[in-house]
Amino acid sequence: MIKVLIVDDVMILCQGLKAILQQDTEICVVGMSHNGKEAFEQCKELQPDVVLMDMRMPEFDGAYAIKEIKEAYSHIKILVLTTFDDEETIEKAIFSGADGYILKEMEDGKIIHSIKSVAHGISVLGGTVFQAVKNNWKTPGTSSVELNLTEREREFIHLICQGYSNKEIASMVCLAEGTVKNNLSRILEKLNLKDRTQLAVYAVKNGLD
Image (cartoon, rainbow, N blue to C red; front, top):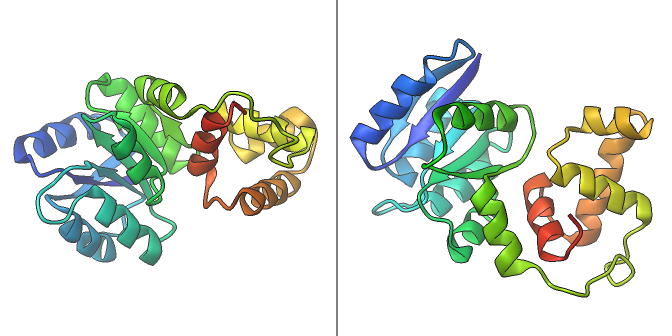
C-alpha cells in the first residue's frame, strides 16, 4: 500500500484528489496539508511514502516544503502536481529535491500511474513539462567529451531518461543491479547532482537524453 499525503491550499481540490486516488486499491491517502510548513509537520507524524505537492501556496510554498522534507526524510518521495510549467517553477522544484513533476491537467489514471512510478524510484516528468525543459534548457553543441562522460555513462543516462529503474537497466545491459547503482552514484557525483530527477533534467539541458 502506497501512503500518500496531498498538499494543496485549495480544500476542494484536496478532497477531489483524495476521492480519485482512493479508488485505486494500492493507494491510501493518509492526510491533507494546505501549506509547506503543515506538510513538513505531517510528514513527521504520518510518514507517507509519497507527497503529492502543489508549488504555489501562501506562507510556505512547495519549494520550502520539498527542501525541508527531503533534508529530514530523504526516503519520502515528492511528486509535484501543479498548474505551472514555466522554467523557474520547474527548476525550483527539481533542484529543491522533487522526485517528479506533473501537471493538474493530466488524466486521473496518469496521475495515479505517476504516483506509483515515483513510489518505486522512477523519476517522472509530465509530457508538457519535459518539453518545457527541453525547449528552455537544452544547450546545443554540448558533448560527452566536454562533460567528461564515458559512453557507458551516457548509455545509463539515456535509459534513466526513459524512466527505467536500476533493476530494469541491469537486465538490459547485462550487469548486476548493484553495479548499475554504483555507476549511477558515480555519475551523480561527477556531475554534482543529487538524484535521478536532477540527472534527467541535466541530461535534457545538455542534450544527453
